[in-house]
Image 1 (tube, rainbow, N blue to C red):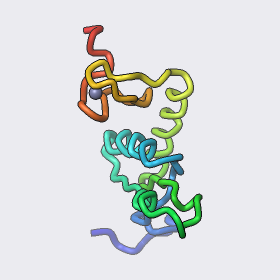
Image 2: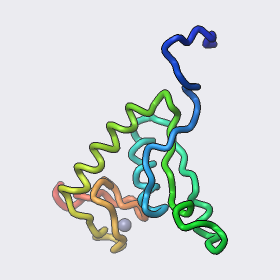
Image 3: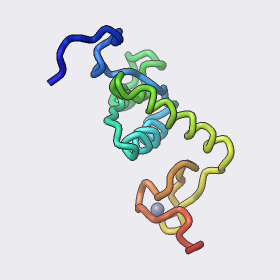
Length: 120
Ligand SMILES: [Zn+2]
């Protein structure tokens, strides 16, 4: 579909680019959910390694969130927004199942109860 006339492309637009290094796979999944929610394909790399600690250097056990290079700018905007919300809003506990949720979750990741359920 696309030809190779790519003067302004320095890299393959469908190369996976790491846009965020999460502290753990839970945070990585939060980011992934936000990005997917905006219609951007997303994958988490390194998550599997957390189950096999021992010979693996610690920093490689972190979960990296990756998107295609062509979506990098868009995804980074989501990240900026996420980090602003993260700093300004507290995490919350699901009133239904008591699961701990990041502030950026609109729904409980566990049971999908709406965050502000009782306000409506
Ligand atoms: Zn819940």
